[in-house]
Amino acid sequence: MATSVKPNVDVWPYCTERVHLTPYVEGNKSSLFPEEFLFSLYAQCKKEHLLDVLFPGMPLVTAARFVAYLKDRPVLVGFVKSDIAPLKVAGFGFLYEVEGEEVARKATVGFCFFKEWWGSKEIVDLSKLCLRYWFNEVKLKVVFGTTLWRNRLAWRFARNLGFVSIGKVPRFFSKDGKLEDMHLLYLTPENFFGAV
Image 1: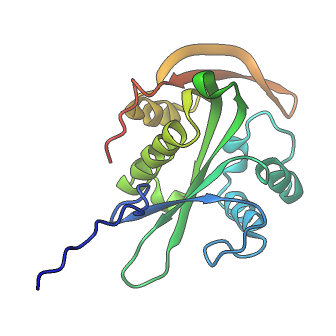
Image 2 (image 1 turned 135 degrees about the horizontal axis):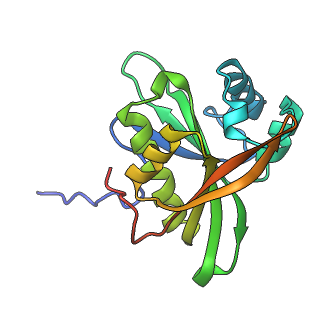
């Protein structure tokens, strides 16, 4: 007698054969997120000198400030799969300034990827999965991105995802007694280059 196989409708859509995206929720115990997980993200960002780029204009980013800033925000963690090792954290994305109702919801997005993965297909795929998650699950109608004007790599990366440049905001970031220009970008679901 032939048996029919029921399709698995509970397959997680935010992964590929190589990468896996997982929402981080403070306080939820998980094998993926050991206790003090946000502190470990801070330690890696500090070790790789990413804090000033990730938080331009924010005065001295300590571990406590980093954790307090991210713990109540929607954070998505990107993992890279390997045949010989457990999942490895490649970076994370987060939303802030989330405003509006479902029909008109907007947010600002931040991404941080660790240097081992810079220039890789994995971070392109993880970025697309993050954006797709935020458009589909959070129901964002537009996301904004901000970066230092001098950060040309971030410009190029955002453009390759479909972000549109709004332009330069002069003297927006203030850090260590200096003012720096900001590059403001936006992305809508219609502009998004989301195929992974």
